[in-house]
Image (cartoon, rainbow over all chains, first blue to last red; front, side, top):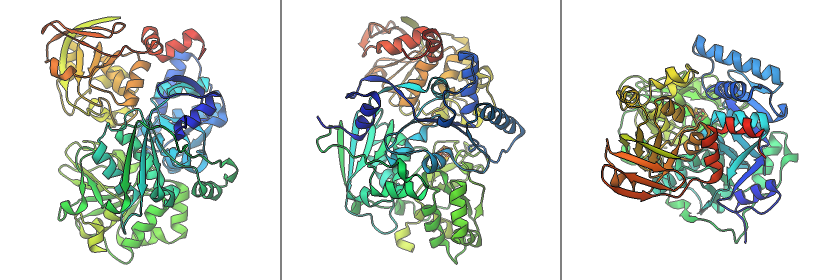
Length: 417
Length: 169
Ligand code: SF4
């Protein structure tokens, strides 16, 4: 019987053929946590296992990204505790302003066939380069940091085959929002969402990472795309060409469910409060005032995202009644965006461009006011997520967000650009 | 293991971890006792007090309970509120895993919502895969929990399990 991509990776790791539903114990190639989850992981290691020593300092990393640069003395103390742990263990440690864990893991660690576990739900992002990557809690990650292993239930797989081409100003974000609108927030629970088809083949890794990043929003354990020439090119660009290896699903792989989509049918979409699976086409929100537009996050804060935003905002000005906040996803994204003149265009259009990190996404360094509405390129719009329970969060692609910033209201980018 | 208790709340589909415990607290408090005071604060301000008044209560929920972030503070605060078990139509994956890791029993039982109201008294047999609604005299069954995960619960969570067994096999 053929195998899905998730089954192939776990079978190789276990040294035998594994079947969906089986519980397996296997080695983890890379594990990480951030300032929201690492303190608890360290505390668990210390109190429960009586150690703060990691199993392999090359396979563990820590990130100050969720509340970065630190907005309070309390969080600064949390960062200090993490720094000490990192120093003691000689692990890679990413400082305030280095960027979001998932962007950095994608740039520096993720590769085909690697098993990656992060103490963050969006760890599924790394399936964009063919890694078996999934999020777990702090205790799980604390245990992995000590033992270098964990247990998995081999997931069933869902195939999402997308053929054809996306229309102008339509992106992989719109594609995912349409999918989650159809299958709902629990539509892929426990599963590996495997994205295939010509439309996915044509996408760069950065756009694929938006899909795999959001797999968790449909309840999936992981999201996976093929490791093909685009992945090879991406790894080479980050100096890791030697880590490339092809990964494809078998033609006769078995899926629990299959979805077929014609990319031409996808329109610019909005997820409206307070659920990611509340979706409707952007034109249905035409004229709705937006107080703040946010571009960034581990979903849509990469170079190509900032580039498209700059292209739309070039020579224009953000609407007076609307604020535009931009957080590049990592230091390397930020540097390249400066070099290419992208940041200058965004600044001239009126954006507040901030140090790489999670920033607005959880309202730690930028929060919304009472009754305000935000349009954001992030992945979640739960009540209170951007630091205020009395605010509303709408989610969209970068083109929709950038075009809406110009008008101060939600627009369908196809109608105005 | 048999768990017996009253249903404290019946919660809707897709109750997320931000609702269980707001992300805004997780950086500020490592002390679960202090954090637990804010459980369900935004949507159900009296939750903590009610739970503490009725230790050993059971929560019943709809589909996809615990979706959203990986914060394991969510099952931890619920355990800290003295919740003895959560029975839901289904759970989000990370929450499911985290609950066993922190030693909070949870049960996936299709059809539970239709047969339970607030204040009903339930008896849950984890090994036998049975839920008896004592108040209504109704019985439902569920797929028994895999041995490995029962072992986690018995040990009191993944850490004590690993400590006792010295790692994975
Ligand atoms: S950008 Fe948002 S979703 Fe991504 S890791 Fe940071 S807080 Fe989480």
